[in-house]
Image (cartoon, rainbow, N blue to C red; front, side, top):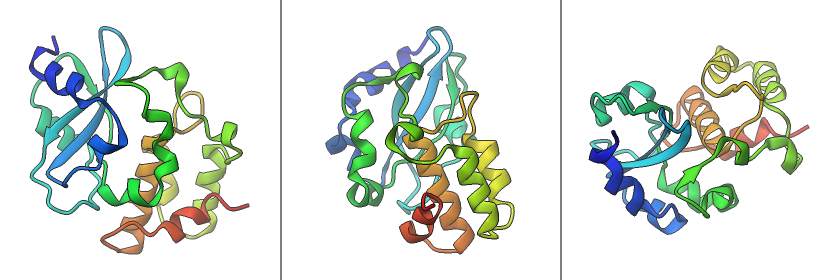
Length: 175
């Protein structure tokens, strides 16, 4: 079912080194329907700006029609790993990401996403709280690295900057 993309997924290796590549490479997260495991798919990208967050429709466009994958975010900008390497840690070990192994924010003394959404609302970021809920809230109410990245991307878009503004991003995680 995933034969077309199997080589890309398996050859990715999923290490910080392979993710720190030129912006011509996009790394997507998806769920394989047959196994319900999250997989990583690396594809060439026409996106030249490494600060762009690729949305689901861009994932679909890049992947083409496939019955085997349920698309999720995301796009890995080079600068994100350079500035926040600790966020890469949970993903170094493997090529797949099992749901039960997801990095829970509350396990690292960070707030649950409900608090993040509330803080975003208090910061008067417009409809950012709704957009965050639509994109990153999961059944268990916790976030993983991809979720954090998307929050950073949304905040970047809100403040109208082309690159990640981690000062704005970090405000969400301050009590």
